[in-house]
Image (cartoon, rainbow, N blue to C red; front, side, top):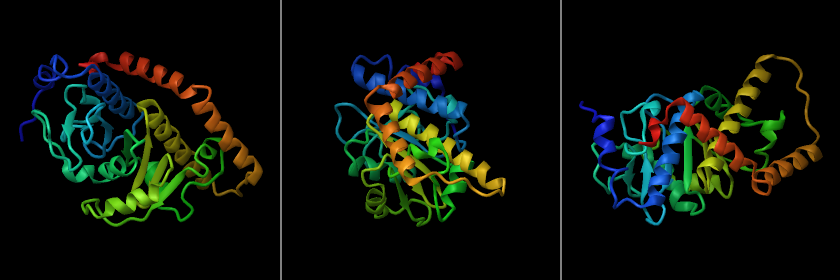
Length: 262
């Protein structure tokens, strides 16, 4: 199978004057998400996705080109698709329509969720296999207290009818644990979505390590759990900490390889 070169895609998108500045910025931030996820080892070779709604274009989304590793993805190589995963703009790349089933469910059902990230990390998978799911055992996990939905495993996500059940399970939450499958986070901005996934996966890693020690667990008082979850919400949305964090992540992406912007 021939995979088009990075240069093929570059000349067709980011240099195109007909592409809006808002779409170009969306492409840059989405490409950064892929590069950062690769850096933090949250990838599954060419599988799973991060998607973003195209600003000003209802029903259109950007997603990774099928066949590229996440560390190869650039702003130009991202593919514009519709809600069914069909390409709506010229691109030398294939897309994986089946892989967009979960993402399309969220984008359709949650209009505030402009950004959606789904991962198959080892720790995320491990926690998704536990009956308890994510447990309130540490400070990072408390960030998600009362903000995680759970969706039972129904097999590989090829059935479009499953989308309604995914949306129902997610509800108004910022994260979804797909049981026996992995993790999903959503938000209105790239920075908020990526931060949600970064720390959700970190919470899973900590839980995995904690349970592996086989020692008695030190539980946190319910009142403290509630207070800390409220503190996290205030820090993220009132004080703008996530915006500062995303700026730092973008600087990291540039240090790793500024070519993602092309």
